[in-house]
Image (cartoon, rainbow over all chains, first blue to last red; front, side, top):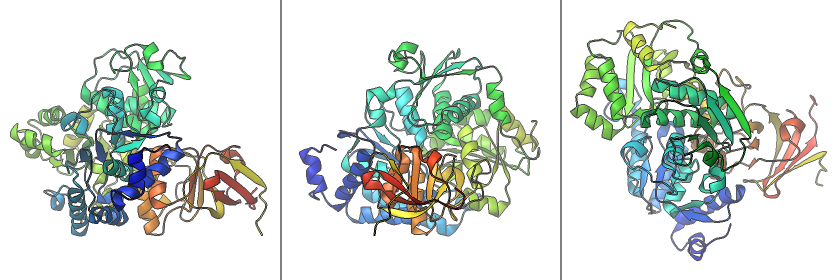
Amino acid sequence: MRLTREEESMLAGAEGEAVRLALEQQIKVGDFFGAEDFVPVASAHVHSEMETSGEAGLAFLEKIAALGAKVRVPTTSNPRSVDFAHWRQVGQEERHVELERRLVAAFARLGVQVVDTCINYQSITPPRFGQHLAWGDTGTVAFANSVAGARSNFEAGPAALTAALTGRVPRYGYHLPEQRLGTVLVEVHDQPQDKADWGALGCVVGREVGDYWQVPVFDGIESEPSVDDLKQLGASLASYGSLPMFHLVGVTPEARTREEAFGGREPARRLVLEPGALEAAYRSYLPESDKVELVVFSAPQLSLDELKNLAVGLEGKNVHPEVKLLATTNYANYGLAERLGYVKAVEDAGGTVLAGVCFYLMTPNELREKYGYRSLVTNSAKLANIISGYGYVPVLRPTAVCLWAAVEGRLPW
Amino acid sequence: MVEEPLLVLRGHPGVGPDVEGEAWVCQDNFSARYDLDRRTGTFSRRSHACYGQSLVGRVCFFNGAKGGVSTSWALLDMKSRGVAPAALVFRLTNPVMVQGAVLADIPLLDRLSPDPLDTVHTGDYVRLRPREGLVEILRRGAGT
């Protein structure tokens, strides 16, 4: 890679050992992908919590923090594996909680804003068009690239941290205009309605495309999607297909027309989603029985609107005594939802709202073993995809079906 | 004496140190979060082509990288607990996998010719030379 004088001096250690190490790692990644130089970033968003970072990751973060390093661009954190106010109720191990506290302390020493959210774009730090970012959590990247027109690759935890320390990333992938053009045309003849349908749409296309370097272009969608709908679509595409960007013709900013989305080129591939395609995505998640144990609204964390809908949906109802209903959001929305009475409404119905976490990070293996969970019902396609790696049998269903299942204690289909 | 390879796969420079070992080829994609019980390095996702098998200490060949950002931390964590793969080779990988391999110092290569999934078989003895962008097949396994 071509380095500026400032970068040469970072690499020589003039700005400390942490910065030297960080830049050295970034150069290796940049060389791998043929980056010619670095590009400054406006912010970094770092995923690190104890479920995935483990004690080795914690030791790495503590080492960097002990070197006295500080982030040099605004840096936020992705969700944690522990809600410090509810971990006993959830049933997590005290030792794990203590390690998570150490991780938060290391983040704080580094100057990270420990906001613990995967919807930073929706409620904390919205990106702007054209901004170069170093964001982790694939859903945040899909949203930033697609809906805001900002520019980021998937920067995994350690990579986003190195970017925060150096204030830059190698310029390759989605920082380059040509990589952002559509490659796969998706003609949609099965209209998504419920927000879970948008996740199901991402599931169908993500499974089919499954390649970080491809960009699907959705055409033929008749509704006006909400930000929550697009958040579901992006998170699901990223999860099922490792896809960091999509275009939605007439909706997203780099796709005012189909021609603009493809940069005047022909699509390399064309997918047609016939009526029934979304139903088939739901049906790909078959329950082993109609008994419901666990219903989870999470991944991404819920917006204020989604929390309100949950509260309204549970009004005058009770969660079945043998069902655990969990919803997760960030601290900002939790505070507002408390103020507006949504948290109380969910709790009165027998559900639990958690803050600063996402279900699949909450030591799901240990919870499964402790409570004997087998199945998990959710309206999040992303959660359904991830949680099967933890030995659960996921059941993806539309939001209304999930609520019905939580109350009745069984699944209608 | 350096052993002469039977076949050489060439690509762009990868990351990590040179390594030799038995190849383990999986035609499926890979994510440490979605597919593995990371405590043991065993595939725990029922729908994965390698369900129930272990990748610990193996020179792994996969089709592609999938899923989210957690694989990066996972590789370091698995290495520290002695349950990491010895190396990772993909047809085509993604940034998360490379970022994680750099942190954990695990060799990783992709975009090789000829296609590794067509030419390398489980049990073959291979040498990876990431700096040169080379995978060398030194001996064929019993199954080939």
